[in-house]
Structures are given as C-alpha cells and as structure tokens.
Image (cartoon, rainbow, N blue to C red; front, side, top):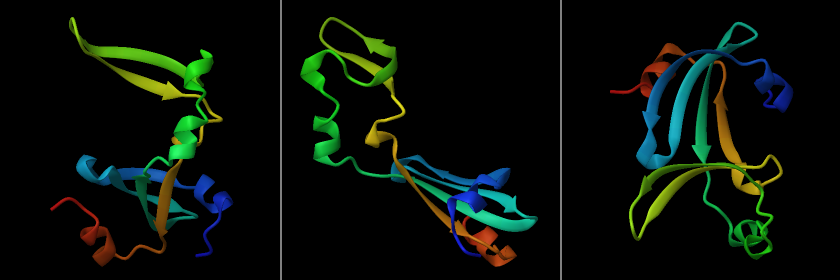
Length: 110
C-alpha cells in the first residue's frame, strides 16, 4: 500500500493490540479500505528549538489547558495540552498494510 495521509484518514479503528507506555508507543489494529492495517503510534523526542519556540518568557505560551494532578508546598505537576501550532504535538505513525495474522500476533501484547 502506498502510504499517504489520505489513506491514513480512512483508517477505521478495530482494537488496541499493545500499549507500551515506557516506550511511548502503541500498536493499534484497524482497516483501510477493508484491508487489515496495523498502525504503530510513537511519541518523538522534543528538539531544543521547538521548546525555545514556545516563548516561555513572553506570557504567551501556546498552551490550551493545564490540569494539576499533584501539588504540595514545593512541587506541583500538571498535564498540559499544547496548541495546534506547536511542533511538540508531533508524533510518528508507522503503517503495516496489509497486515497478516502473523504480523498481528507479533504486534499484540504477549
């Protein structure tokens, strides 16, 4: 299958095959034009220029929402949702299509 964004937009989700949070990766199964397809979703490392481009000192960082999930006298932790224009939202998709039963088993949780 020729990989392009148009084909990926036609992906119809079936199920999660495996979730690998330590690797920031997930394998999902679905279909594109009725053909079994595996997508491997990977978060990518942030490049220093992308972090600098957030304009931290300007008071206008492109963050849509903060949700605090830990707070004490010294520390706090938040989940942050970046704006659509941020290059930090980028992630990689590897597609396998057609995906044989052997490949589906290979990318499924063991």
